[in-house]
Amino acid sequence: MIEVENLLGSLKTELNQLNIPAEMESRMRIALENRSLPSLPRRYWKAGLAVSLLMLLVIWFQRDNIADSKILTFFSNEKSRVQEQNVLETSLPMAKSTVDVQKEKEKLAQEGYVIKREGENSQEHSDSSFALADIMYVSTLKDIVYNSKSASKGEVLGIKYFVASNFNNLAYTKAKVLITESYDQKYKAGDIITIIKTGGIITHYEQIVKDEIDKKFQIPQADLEESKHKLVVADNYDGNLLYPEDKIVFFDSQNPLFEEDGEDSSFIIGPVVKFSGDEILNKVKDKRDVPFVWEEFYSGSLSDLEGRIRQTVERKKSYSKDKAQQAAYQALNDTQRQAVLALESADVLYREKGIYEERGIKTPDGTIQVIFKTSKGFITVDLVDDNYKVFGVREVRS
Amino acid sequence: MEHKQLAAMARQGDKEALVQLIMVEQRQYYQLAYVYMKNQHDALDAIQDMIVALYENIHSLKNAESFFTWSKVILVNCCKNLLRKRKQIVPLDNIQEEKDSRLEVGKQEEMILLEGLMSKLSNKQREVVNLRYALDLDYQTIAEILKIPLGTVKSRIFSSLKQMKESIGGEFE
Image 1 (tube, one colour):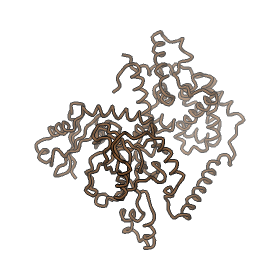
Image 2 (cartoon, chains in turn red, brown):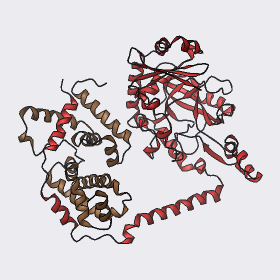
Image 3 (cartoon, rainbow over the protein chains, first blue to last red):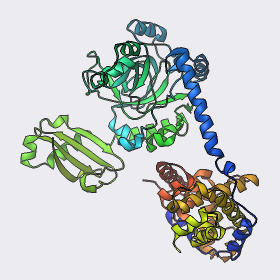
Image 4 (cartoon, each protein chain N blue to C red):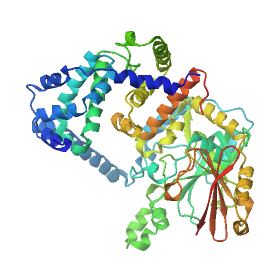
């Protein structure tokens, strides 16, 4: 079999055989003849342009504040609403189901859900200082499919925002989603499920309270009152809020983190991919603000992405979390086994690109990480290969 | 003279220092231009454009140490501009145009096969494959030269190899 790498090696060989033309140096000198450095205004035209743009931006934002005292003017932006609706109208028809969508939406509205999309969608830009690639573990499509409970496609019927004050004080969106396709058949088309995703729109007051800003600073009562009427986007780490009528591909997992109204819900892991027809709508304004592997999800067409998801779902069938738990448990010594609180509660995570352990050790690609909770902290067992071979065991005391 | 000194002199408008800086890595510049332009004549044209652009913009170079990366970014842009002007579709086909006659028969067959495989790649894929395999640049350097995220470079190379391997009937793991 011809190896592609060997073939590509010949590219380099060919290039190395090139002789550097003797005239290269003289051609450069000729090009520079009669050239003089540009004048100062020409040299700094970019700076001038930048200052002008900045001033325009300041004026623009000031205008918003004067007009409305709300930063989130996109909520009342009729133009973008119409544009979004146009996009929606061209999207694929829903899978056939017996669900009366209108009736379900009316029911959700009575429960306090927002069921109508208003304003701009999907492209709120989170603070650019959040370089997510730097602060979060980046998961590949395979990681996300393997580590999720289910991979599905659906339409958002209604949403609610809330602050998880009993857990981590972050803002979340709770969404009711009508399943149109479940790639791994964990759901049925027509099911309506509840998903929870980080990021939400809350009042500025809620944000002040949840982040305990009022305890750290003396905020005048009048300002606090005013903040109750101002909306802010909070904890929107991926710059991608959910809205009613969004058509989405998503990956969900168990929701062990917190209980919301005691309702059965799933937690979103990885990116939510929004689409219209065969087009993926998550256009990244600044790619550096988004974990680079998410380009796996955002580039190409919906059908491409779905093809890759289906393939990965097929492969996942030969992957057993139970076997991984068993193999990891076998690797523990007697003392460690006694410390394990519950075998079945061990977290099992697939890491396609391996992981960096302490002291700079990187585990091989395709590591399966089994994390046992113990009375003293955690024991992590790294497994590799399809045979769940033990790569290493680490104890972490909390 | 050290590169930093040369760069500092070039920033002050010293043309000779600028030319000498390029000559330090002349092979790399020429090969980079050649990968894009595919022939000596056009490669030299691109280098001429580059040196002028460097001279006119070197005041904006804040860090003398990044001169080589910065200048290669400009060279790539000059190549793309030239190609655009000549209404060529960014033609990063492989680089063998002028030398086929020198190749052994087996090598010629390999190059034809490679050409076929490369032609199935997108322009962006061919670009990173050439920079990686023809110029032997590392991923980080490619990312800096093309001003794209490191992950994009990796994923483009990964998808290109996958596609090429699949084209010749191999499996990709």
